[in-house]
Image (cartoon, rainbow, N blue to C red; front, side, top):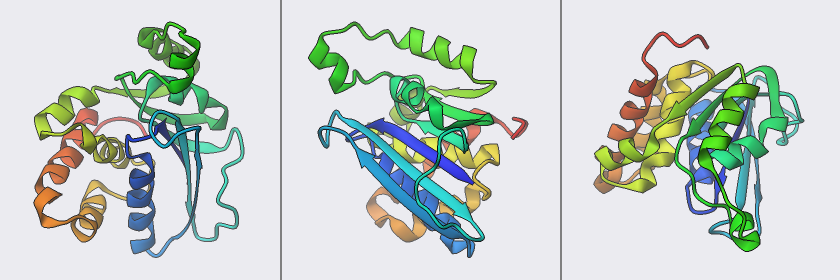
Length: 197
């Protein structure tokens, strides 16, 4: 299973990749990961590659072979589409963060154009209102749990929301656990149980 997570520095994409990788390893699967981080820690492009299987030799996902793209930011999801295989799934936040490249060029950034482009180019796409979920949970930082929650509920990750929850319980300190568990389940609820994986 090949998964690309992409967003803007500071959104927690690398932590989300670790959450997915640790959950797969707990199932006894082999995992390889790699990150490419853009021009700045905050504001630059971040792409994490997560490969899961019985035997995985390389951490980098070739173009047109990703089963899943998890987009923390719409423009970054569009930028990562070259990795998606023909029947791949894109899960993307509807919330725009103006990328540093657009800010430097003073170019207009229309989030609606990005979302329309994804809808037209991808046969399976799930748009997630991460802003309202994060607001419900009390922090914008939980986006990195919300989107993996949607992905687990879709069936594409090869493990369940409950298995992801077990990893969160191992990884997180008690003081932020309840908020993150809520984020996980709110994300999974976005999907319902009948999305074709």
